[in-house]
Length: 417
Image (tube, rainbow, N blue to C red; front, top):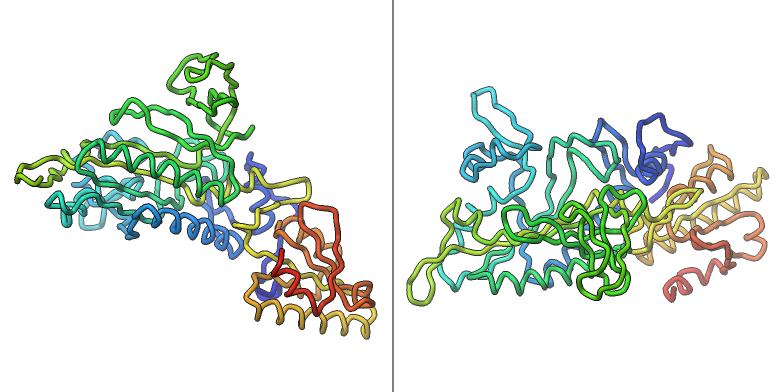
């Protein structure tokens, strides 16, 4: 992608009430634009990160049998009435059509997925079933002040599982735990599994949290055996109930959660199956969520320095950021431009992700500052100095070490990185 075609100008500063450093950097680097409190637009850089996160999630969820669907964001009132959540779900956005029909904007999809499952589940032979989607969610958040960490509109992956009994649900629940750990590891986040309140469903649910000083949750954590429990369900805990070591009290950001719904929604919608003897039983259910747009905010909080963002390679919008730094001499600059164009074409043909800062109306200093702010893993520079050796300079965003690479060898060398 050519920077000149994006028509995007980064910001040196922003006039905003944002308290989140990560979201502030995303706004300045033009990954996102703020529309209102808890509402954001995703520009090309931000969208590419969301797509890469989604790709990792899809790959891992499909490994454990997940089948992707898309459900509506607009929910008729009757489904929420059937579970008695029309009045009880405080964060539900409600609206009325000009014909008097009432709807909710999808805050979660248990009310929609359960009736859908009735279309397919009749016999024990139809179970288990695992359905997931990547869909926009809407919640009337009272505290939308933490940037992308708490939004009114956000992108989420939600997976729902359907089982013959709780024993089968328990087995799949453990599979999802391991899958989530792989997902967060691939994205570049060190997550811990935290016991949290299960509400009306079970004694505990489990949250996946990333330890961070900007986290909204307080967690009792054992660094010895990695036991963790959310402070919301316990007043004080000083020793680990597993290994008896002292616990640390840390701040953390929630990046995912999983629940055993059991028969709560299958009873509300009369979702049953017949066993081998022809006897009917309620289906046991689980649900498993990951906030995808929230992950963009979490990554920005974790991966940054004084100059800007430092995205990990697995989810960075591009792998290489090519800069043509001009000298002011027309003859020399023509050669720099030609060399940069040739390298860009060669790298693009090789199928590599590269952002080419081909802008001619900005200074070299601005290009370098933008490269640091945007945070693409490798910065590649062609200048008067590098051309003397028919080379380019390549530097890892998080390192001060600069490597000189022959232009003709660039693709070959980067293949071995």
